[in-house]
Amino acid sequence: MKITKPEPDIGALKLMHIGMRLLIEVILPNGIKSQATSRLIGYKKDDFILLEYPMGRDSGFDQVFLENASIIVRAITDTSFRDIVAFKTKINTIIYRPVKMLSLDMPINIATHKIREEPRVDAVYTVDIKCNGKKCLAKMINFSISGCGLVLENKDIYILKGNSITINLSISSDIKAELEGDVTSVLADSGQFKVGIKFNQNQLELKKEILHNIIIEMSNSGKFSLGGIF
Image 1: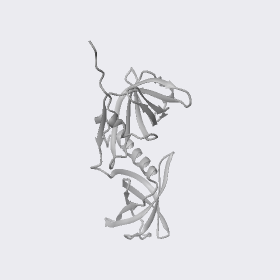
Image 2: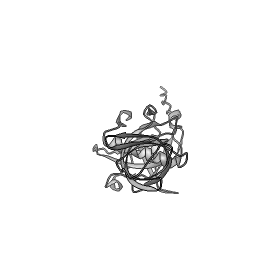
Image 3: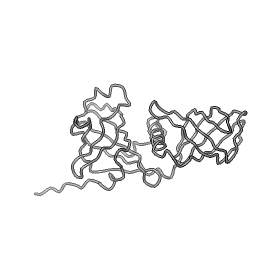
């Protein structure tokens, strides 16, 4: 009897572009899970997916034996606003030339989860801002590709709607940014000022990296669920 092999969901895989950042979770036979970040190198339909050899987010990741381990891959796409794509498969081999990479079995099912209904995600970071020639500290309370929200208590800095503003943000050792934009709103509330910012239309890739990192941090802290899609 001829067995028909299910077709992989290539349409969903095409939402992922070459070089995009990925979060991977390796599941070992003893049930231990280990997280790392990687990037998509490419894929061959019906055959395999190639990823850069991952950088461990967890200590001891380099000691994990990866071949034949189960792996969950998640990514934030460029579609419309943001979608999360996720799939579960197995690592079939480690490739060492021309660069070190992982070869994955092609998954049959690829799940997608739309987050465009929540284009601005919560974020709590201390940032340096500069406006009208003065500098001060502020708290970033949300972030999106197009803008962010700030809270500040410094009464010596005057911020008005329409002002240009520069925000220096550091959220990890490898993601630091100087973002520029315009003030779209200023609201005084209980001795604080809540300021809405619209970013300039540059540094798009950097802002994608920042959004990706924030969502992953929220997932790890339980504030945003990625587990519902694998």
